[in-house]
Image 1 (tube, rainbow, N blue to C red):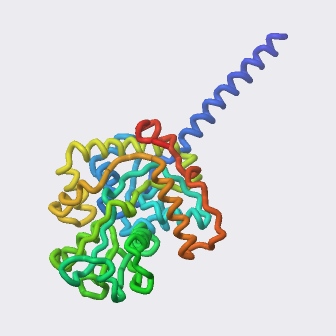
Image 2: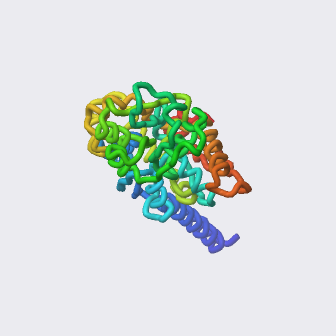
Image 3: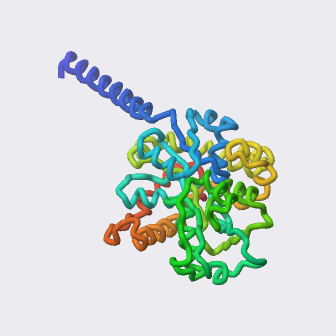
Length: 334
């Protein structure tokens, strides 16, 4: 080989190596460092609010913009529409969207409500007996397409109340406390803070607060579009590290955490303090999430929300656990 050929070979190798490094650097830098996250104005998303207010996202090198929504299904619509990269949402809207063909990925659970959702009913008598109470037809307000709708179905199934004895009235979460206080409906099934707002407006001594720990417990998750999640694994890892810091902060500083969440939910700190223990406020991924989603998919078929012949998705396939495994390995139990 001549000296010219040797020099040409080395030049070619150097060019290829430099080009490879440049390509690798460009691939890495192609990940988004700016993330728009949908935040539902409920205590269930406390980790996101705390991480934002305490600067944990910035510490992890990701610039987060939060956008507030009164219900997860509205936030999910914004995500699907392209105005968000990630959103907080209960699992039911994700199930319904997935059955209808949307490609979504769950990156972590961020909260589960301990002890279930309450059914709030206007008092009729001194004690609540389901058969007696629903011996006449009652109007129950809830938010259609949210986890509370599934809870409502589970409630009537448990107490064996026939569909002829109740009417479901679909409403926005923020409207439910007002119509309940005005006497336009007999009962409500809604998540916090709207449950507390409704009880405060109607009067605690004038309602039955029925809570069953063996009924549906809402799971709040962090979700993104499948393609974006697959292309931004490092960014998701940074987001989850920030949320892990918020998890620790929430556990070690409950008073300040409640102050932060109060500014999001507009709940007074005394009320928040009373319900604070009902929220797990922890990252995680486990099989109970998958089994809940499977139950909801079957319910959607049984109630005609989707055709009975619709194929049930493999919900395990939409769980993106790689980033959480790096941040908190023991939080993943799949």
